[in-house]
Length: 292
Ligand code: GDP
Ligand code: K
Ligand code: MG
Image (cartoon, helix red, strand yellow):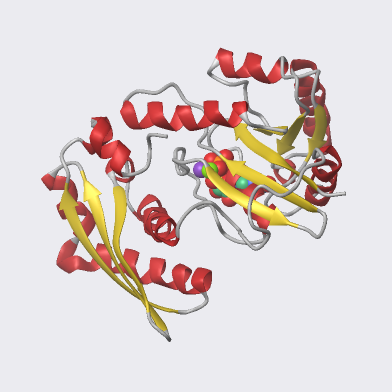
């Protein structure tokens, strides 16, 4: 018998959704930072076993959209409800419920199994954890509850095994050697965007989109050229930095990650371009893969 199904991870920003997905996959598929809106897409990560295929979806944190890009991000979350065989609702120690009541009701009224994961328990003491455990089980009584630490791996194998039990009988949905639905260029864009989230302040990371225009694999090296898109001329100057030092650092750190990811030497060329108000422009968003 073969089992296969879609396991979709949803929750507030920054609770650790991407960290959990990567822990299951054993690879850094999703970028992780302490900033909200690090994840902008729905990213599939596929775990293949001899007799199962677990198709995980990492999604953006649930927010109230303020501009077109964020609306598309919430469309990815909506779609994650539609095809789930198992829903993972992740919360973290000390958090309140979802800002979006509709999403929250969808979870509590879900017909499909819900696993409620209380994450970051490495940061709490016993008393706090027990109090939170009770609170969350009352809020989402239809869910199976697991306290975990995605970062340290605590209880993660138990959640994994429970998901396998819940997967329906089905042939695989993807070839059994496939790891994700995203093309190689997507991971180049994301590696660069992660460094921008880490090194630039305030509005800058949110005004940035990355587009990899060239990805050329030779025998011993992969050559990539990517454009960092910003919304305004002033942002371009900030990205480049004094004597180009800032963008150089992004390039060096992203290249290191990409060499690990692709297992090959990487040459990465970066440049910056102004693309006025791309975040609010339907056509541009479509071009960058935000409209399904
Ligand atoms: P997402 O926005 O829900 O995808 O959250 P991320 O996976 O990007 O993680 C947000 C932040 O929380 C990062 O700084 C992570 O390192 C941190 N984090 C994730 N899981 C844990 C955990 O189990 N314990 C602790 N202490 N931090 C965590
Ligand atoms: K985050
Ligand atoms: Mg994320």
